[in-house]
Image (tube, rainbow, N blue to C red; front, side, top):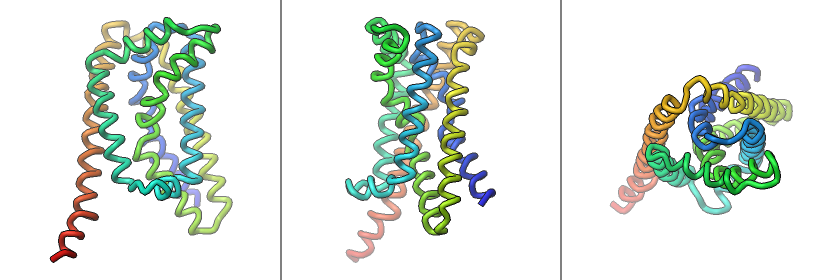
Length: 225
């Protein structure tokens, strides 16, 4: 069980990729105060934690209830990521975050909540909690259910909490990194990452389309013949 939990922790962290998403977070929070960034990091992390627990407990049932296949979810998420990547490359992300920050009221927390409402989609989902993370959670939840071990399920929950805490600490490092990179360096890194996000989105679309053709369309055509 320890080996399974270790693998789950490694794959979950890799799929969340908070380090890779850090420049995106910096782009969204550029120009905000340190207190606002900290509150925003906390709100995003709590959202990520909540989403992962929900999908661990009910992910497969939710998709099944709405008649959504994982491949369809992957393609939809891929299209969203592609659009996000294009927008980041065109520097719209910074403009949106600054506009929302200007409208923030009620101190640091109120301002953070204002920005949070603007970026929770797409940043928390699907940039952090994307199709890969959801698939990973569903697969390991099924494995824990099949094993009949409550201890393993509690272990999965503990891993999710630990990875979420690590994600929070990484997001907190956004401001120091912002000071190190400077405005020009931040702009370059953000646009490069925007391109990578767009590429990841296209990969999701390609993977989802390929799996649908191989597992759904091709067998249906063969069955007709």
